[in-house]
Length: 143
Image (cartoon, rainbow, N blue to C red; front, side, top):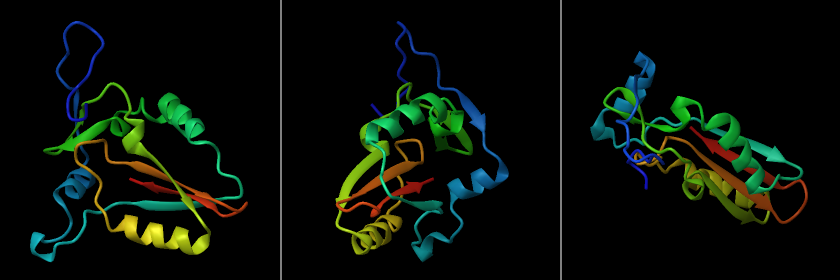
């Protein structure tokens, strides 16, 4: 369950908290006046593939190499990174959709970039855009 530290042991230790950098804390607070109703700052990267690897391959790579990094398994809370979940929620973090081609990729990316990331999960998501034709797949990585 997102938002709570989950531990296999009999008692759960308190969440690990680490102070954010000044830049990280500014990003958490937001860079715009609230009256402007702007989406929070998010870095979006779009990578194209001739042949997109399977979703499970990305999940294994992230579980082994990225998830152990404190900032990838922590949420932003009052200027600190707070580790909440012992296991990565792959349903939230890895979304896979089928696209017909470049126009579908463009439309999906434009729509998705306007959506904020959930504060209930560590602030990143990977959207696997699997093309029906070779050379027409992409990944949108949001951080």
